[in-house]
Length: 277
Image (cartoon, rainbow, N blue to C red; front, side, top):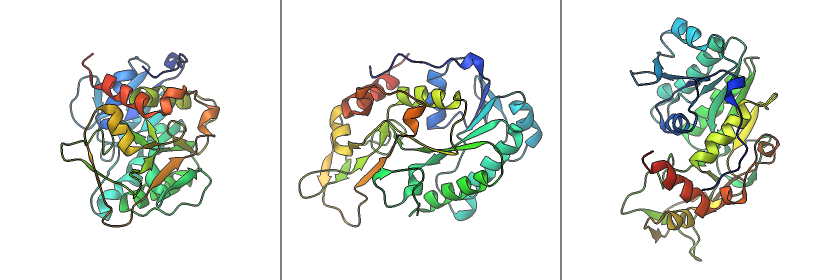
């Protein structure tokens, strides 16, 4: 099982997680089994506090009262501009309710747009998709608020992604003339939980931070490692061949084992996360 032995102690900090029932929230709930974390959901769910983030500010303030940090995973991934604007609304609501506690916002590698081999937090960004534009607008609004904020530019998370989480029997991947498939920064579910715990319990995390295992993997290699069939296809349009997040800054806060960056290690974490516990 890909892992490192270091595990932060959440008992030293009280954390609120907003958006506990999404894919990332589900991963963290499975790995962060501690009374130090309070979980928010919009609907009734065992172990979660039911709070409407945008329409019940008092309940949100009460939930966040006494928290040392707030992790906001709540967001909108698709829809018209008005719907995507809710990403900013949710972030600002979390910042207000946190009452000067640090807020960690789930952003996305989509802000980097056309991608690249060594994408750093300090790079100029130009998102290509409405979702990427919405996440960048969220970052800008949050960072302009003057509150302690860390925007987490999260890469692909195994199981919450399009090819493992969205796999189907007719899965096809763009392939170049040499049979190579797109490269993406990835992180396994266990490593994600461990890494975020390190970052959230750090004394002085930066305003923007890439979240991924170091390096990148070919999407085809990841499906092969997971034992999932796929077929190569000639691209029908422009392809973003490489989205590799630089993790030098992240390495100051979180340790990684070599296998955390391999297709085999990431696939093993994905399989483990799917097994009944």
